Length: 112
Length: 115
Image: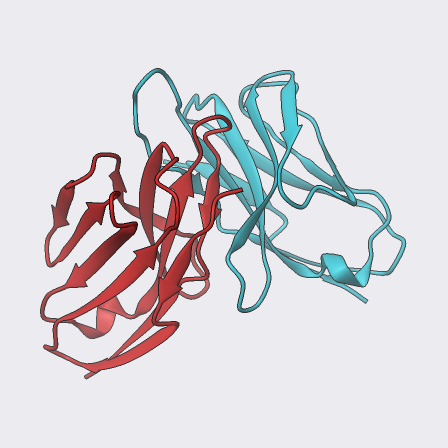
């Protein structure tokens, strides 16, 4: 069973602030690392799928990096907006089942 | 674009009752999954399927059963509902082939309360 830790649990920032959160994992024995954005009362929505050490992905103001050697991935949001308020989930896909093991998420609230 | 469709959206059951949560996808995905989400916890895998006729247990399968008779449908059955099964249930699907790295697509969830 894969182990995934996310920090912080929650974060309050002001509109315009840039922020980042961490997904850490003790073992790099996984197939891929996924980031999802989950708004209240909606379904999780995929942001990024990353597989290689050193991978960097970007979508608008959101970007992510992966360091499998040191066991972490960072998600960055530049110039946070109220619509960025959501829970951000990190998950590892195992090599056999191709199923995801999720962290408990980082809940972001952006104040206007 | 329907994607992954779950029904019902909400349900209240009495202890000991049974029910089936429906999940259908129209994206021709081979893999399908059921997760449950408890407050303060991450999503936990209940069962998954790699194709029609093939299912396997995830981390928390006790009290649940699944079947996959078609590529499109992956129902989850609760036989004897217990209060511990009060949760939000998510169905997901993805296309897995070779070295492809596709994300999972989630349904809107079923909120289930057992009283």
